[in-house]
Image (cartoon, rainbow over all chains, first blue to last red; front, side, top):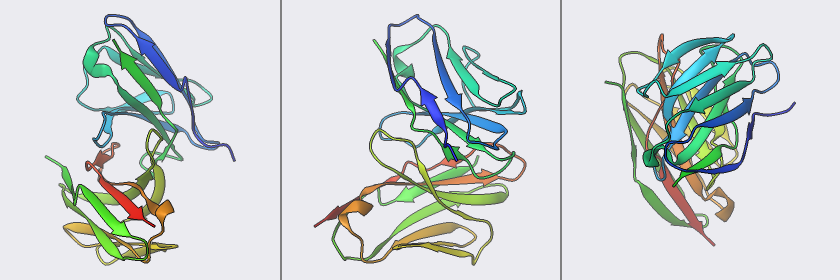
Length: 112
Length: 110
C-alpha cells in the first residue's frame, strides 16, 4: 500500500510569486487536509477536501486555495507569496471525514 | 477556543530512563486525541488515537493514556532511536481539522 506522497520536496520562491504544491493520497482515502508548519511549531490547519469539495478551512487568507481531483489527489496554491509563508507544508489523507489522518513527507517552501 | 498545550517543550533522558510527556487540552467536545512522532524535516508519523477517558493504547516502548483533560505518552526504557518530536493533536466533534500542540522534543542519550 502506497503512503501519502508530496512534490516537490523543496522549493525556493521570491516574494510576490505563486506556487503550486501537490499531494497524492494513500490508496483508498478520499479526504485530503493541508497544514502549514513553521519551524518549532505544531502544524496549523489550512483546509480540507472531501470528495472534491472544500470541507472546512482554517484561518488562512483567500490567497491560499486548493483543488481535489477525481483520483483524490490534491493541489495547494499560494498566490502573492510573503516571507512568512516560508514553512513546511504537509498534506494528510484519511479514509473518510472525520478519520485518522496520515501525513506525507512535506514540502519545504522558502520565500526570499 | 480549542487549545492544546504540551509539556515539557524539551526533554533529555539517558537510554533506559523512563518518563512521560503531557498533553493538556481544552475543547468544546472531543472526538479523538492523536499522538504523532515527527523526525526533523519529515512529516508526522501516526502513533495512536484515543477516543474516551480511561482508554489506553500501547506500541513497543510507548503507551498513551487519556483523561477528560489531558493525555500522557509514557515511554519505557527508551532507546536513542526514540529521539524525535512528539506531537499531540485533538479533533473536535463536527470539525475536520486537527488542532496541534507545539510538540515535545525528546532526546535519548546513549
